[in-house]
Image (cartoon, rainbow, N blue to C red; front, side):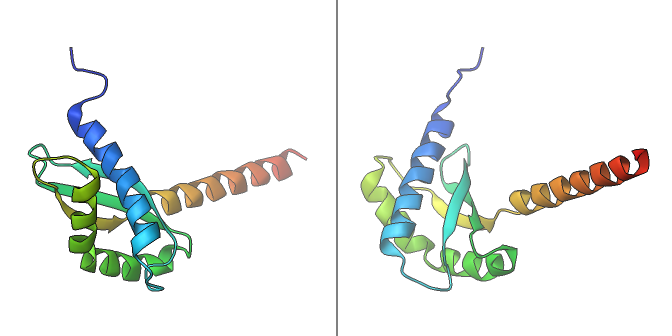
Amino acid sequence: MPREFSRSRRVAELMQRGLAELIQRDLDDPRIGMVTITHVGVSKDYSHAEVYFSCAEGPEHGAEAEKQLNHAAGHLRTGLSKTINLRTTPKLHFRFDTDLERGSRMLETLEELARKRDQEEH
């Protein structure tokens, strides 16, 4: 029976919290803006980590923020290695998280369909 909280999940959660703090504290780049770390996925050998984020400025800002975060990945990895006690700190790969945008569009579509249904009933 698999454990409820695997080691990789605990490492991912620690990385998520650590990266959120590091980005807020250490990165003062207007091209990044206000980002929120939404998910971290760690490879089985802990050598790579996919870091998903969203932007407060909206999806049109996501590509530039992704580019700048990947540029700062080495600095963030070094800072993370000082806060998380791992044998090796995973290489960071930042990806803009489109799930929030897609979910928002789906919600708008559902609300629009509900309004049309209500109008047809009356």
